[in-house]
Image 1 (cartoon, helix red, strand yellow):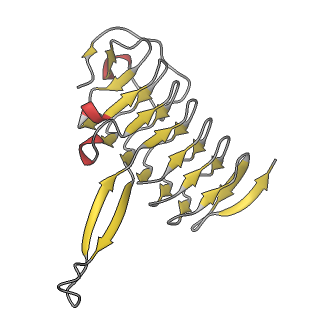
Image 2: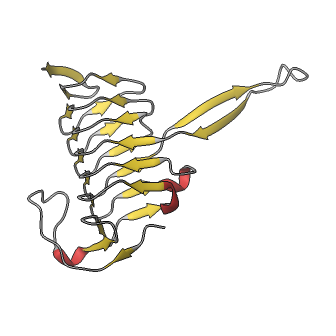
Image 3: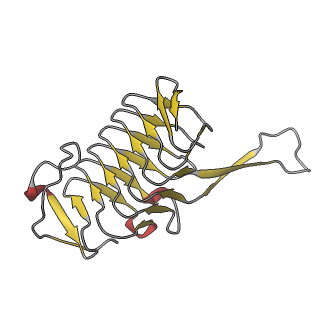
Length: 186
């Protein structure tokens, strides 16, 4: 479990992250704010690495789908209201030699998801099992990252975007659309 205790805090400029001083619990980690209505399921599998992390109202981090410590959130990450984050899985298909005509067995093995320091995930995003989210990434509100996505450092995903399964977003690039298309790379 992530230990939390109430205390006062300063408001940030990003209204999609926090609305009221009374809405947050503060952990024993300096500067970490978690909304009272956020859901950190399987908290023992979620690692908050450093201060300045904010988790907004109604956000859900699904640590209960992984084990052990498979969601790592970097320093200064901001997670907006109603964001859902699910960890990635490795899927293995197996069949047995003595029963070749049967359906293959499907085995899901949890993998680690790292959300890099300085990343902002705006409200109402669905982070559905990406492989990696790099440093200083900005994911606009109402965006969806599908399974197997890799988002490199300093990427901007504009609001309302859909990143399809397995896509790799290059460092220092800007993306938009459903599905996303490259707008700029620097």
